[in-house]
Amino acid sequence: MTATPHFPSRLPQVGTTIFTTMSALAQEHRAVNLGQGFPDFGCDPRLLQAVTAAMQAGHNQYAPMPGTPALRQAVSDKMHALYGRRYDAGSEITVTAGATQGILTAILACTQPGDEVIVLDPCYDSYVPNIALAGATAVRVPLTPGSFAPDFAKIAAALTSRTRLIVINTPHNPSATVWSDAQMRQLEELLAPTNVLLLSDEVYEHMVFDGQQHQSAARFPGLAERAFIVSSFGKTYHVTGWKVGTVAAPAALTAEFRKVHQFNVFSVNTPMQAALADYMRDPAPYLELPAFYQRKRDLFLQGLQATRLRPLPTRGTYFQCVDISGVTGMNEADFCRWLVQDIGVAAIPLSAFYGDGFDQQVVRFCFAKEDATLLAALERLKKL
Image 1 (tube, helix red, strand yellow):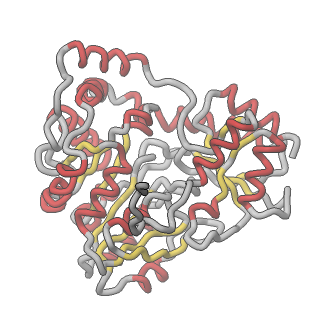
Image 2 (cartoon, rainbow, N blue to C red):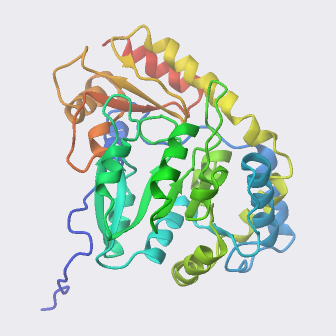
Image 3 (cartoon, rainbow, N blue to C red):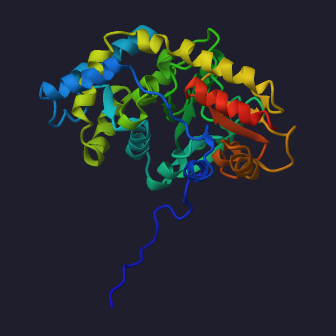
């Protein structure tokens, strides 16, 4: 009799994610799924036509390891126009298999066993497992409860001789907050005397509302010189299933990044890259994205007024957090299970984004949905 050999898990603490759990519950109960963060509407037909044209033109073999030159140049041009820093398309921009792969590759490239990586809780769920895979240690520093602002005194206290990297995310998932110019400058000042690197997760860069500007790390010389800046075409162009992103970094950092990238991905989907490069000739789709999502945010906010949920400010991303304390005495996770089973709407508990499961009676909805989807969810939420 044979048996599958046992071996030690690389991620013994990792199980089924809350996103998988809630999506399965939503399907089981035929709930409106405002939990997982992806659109339920299609992309611009012109982008699909560009992919078809690229395949018909023969762009079906391996792309260059760093990405197609045309797409890297388009990203360089966009970042220069928006943020004032010119990244060399040849040596400083790499096309990745989605932002998640870019984040993992950056962490693997720059950390060693024994290094420490600061993450700011609540944080996206891939960061800490990525750090564990690199053999480094995650040091969790909480954002300020309520406002989710960075606490620079706590960040400073967490810096040690072993700190290799700090991970920030603006606009921020899950809180929908946006770092200000002053906060970025404070981080720049804090890191100036150190050799600490920065991983700036900016996948929601084009979803900033109410006339604000996205404060990319690229805008700040003292941050840009030490930063891997991660972006996502999937988020920007409503094609999350394509899994295409970019990482921009100074040449010395990019050289180390590509050493890892070439052996865990090598290259990314060729016709998608050709199509994206062609599509990016027109900046309107990403320049108009803030207004597109702000209208959806406002529609959802207006509908929430008819419920007992208390909306928190949403300054960026396509997420809306709400305070549930006026509705229930349940914890966030139990409330989300009850909400999907009894009310028919799926949400995500913020406690799932904290290492210690910190519960502050806040849950997150995704409003990257058709208006009809949002209105259907709001109709059900009126029962609260």
